Amino acid sequence: MSFLKRLWGYITTLFKGGAEKMMKPEVEIEQAINEAKKRDQELRNQAAKVVAHRTQLESKMENAADDVGEAREMAKQAILKAEEAKASGDAASQEKWTKAAQSIAMKLQAAENNLSTLKTQYENASTQADKAKQAVQQNAMRVSELAAKRMELLGSLEAAKMQESVNEAVDAMSNMSDYEAVSLDKVEEKIEKRKAEAMAKAELREATPEGSELELKEAINMAQADAKLEELKAELGLA
Figure 1 (cartoon, one colour):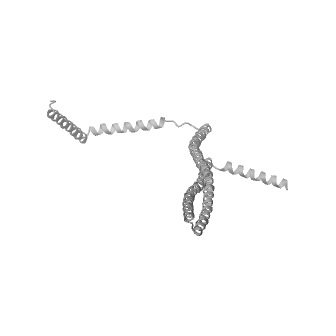
Figure 2 (cartoon, rainbow, N blue to C red):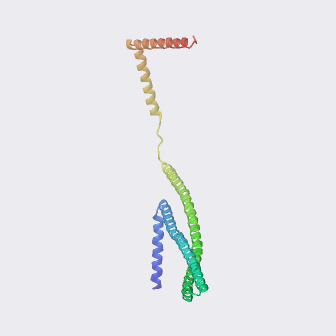
Figure 3 (cartoon, rainbow, N blue to C red):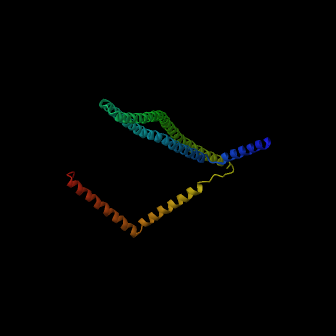
């Protein structure tokens, strides 16, 4: 049985290690960020419950304090009524108000005990709420640090990919030992040929009537342009 357990543990570890090797680094980074955000949200939800419990105790304490105050005033009034009856010699009324005061006093005692218990609970809840808020703040800092680390890791990953690409290019160049360099002589010959043909066509065109007419038009245009410049200079007082 122990052997099978160890064998299963070995297989599980082997499979996990293989899966981690197959997983892309950027995917692992995103999974880590998502898991951290999930834990952060869970922690915030739990902390919210703790803080809400403290707030509920605050409300209960206020109501309990009101009950104590009301019971105390009613007990005082009952005592005064009993004293008035005693002074007037009304034994029946004295007994009635004395019993009423005793009953209210018991309620007052119960209300004070309840208030004391709530105060203790509130102190504990306040301590727990402070710890919960501190835990949320600390975890938020860890998430921020993890996010910053994510940017750093992604940058390093891109740099690694770029270096790998450069290495592959260098390796490819190194493997091209039988590569024959392309000669540019034929290319240069073709360019010179086209250049010579273009110059010859231009020279032949100038020798034709059409070429002379074009040259004359260009001369006229230049003369007109010079005249326009002189006109503009005159307007500016530069002539």
